[in-house]
Image (cartoon, rainbow, N blue to C red):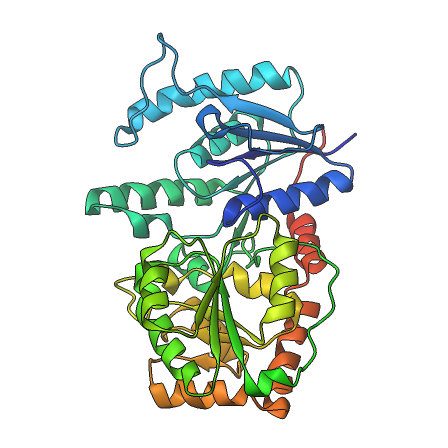
Length: 387
């Protein structure tokens, strides 16, 4: 019988960034392997811009019917009353069919529905964790509520994939057989590793692609000012409507920017032609960016396929710094020290040291960060019940 996966998510799997694109890539691969795909998402998250495979079954969750009690995240009783109503909606779409596995991403209240469906239908639940949601809580009460909700779901799950061992530790998963670290799967693109170019020596280009937050300003300013000393450029791919970017462009003549690309393959192509190094930057204050302690940057995995050196700016006691130190990453800076930054940037202009950094990236791109390897782990560890 055909295997059938049911994803329950706060957002639909779709192109872009974060969890939605990761989910989309895994589900697309499963479809190619013969799986049936069903997706349960809030009706409000669906739009004409969402593009799904025509064979995917989309089950929109109704936000409200006049005879339904309202949902209030602060009131657990109202949530419990809503779950069987949503289950009934799912069953109207599925009819008598049941999935062989249920998948969810740990964020918001919808994993509670995934758990409810798992227990009601006796179908194993698998959970992907990309972030520690309670870090974004606005009060201690909300933090405790989110954490308790997360622990309830994880305790009942058959398989759990945290994105880092530090995130696993937060939820006491390090010593459980049902948990293993799963890196964010990159897009499957055939591209050649970038080779050394002579202009890397005279005009190094460090490139950032992705969100640009106010707490990154200091890192980017110091990096741009240091690059200026060696005739280098800080290239930023981000929306032009960004106050942090505006300040950098005003203060640093060697900061250049490009609007975001619609497709990932176009970003890769642009970076391949224009960059000599990729930047992964975290705030050096965990007060400003507390999720850095446990999150793992998908851009490190995504852009490793270029084979370019990757410069990591991150304080110690973060998941990415722990990873970098374990792997003796050559371009890893743990404090905003101008001399250390300059020394590392100068190495990017030397062919021998650039090649050493590039070789390190290529090694991970071919092995730990290989999309086929990551998806194979996902499929191998995915528990399922065939009816």
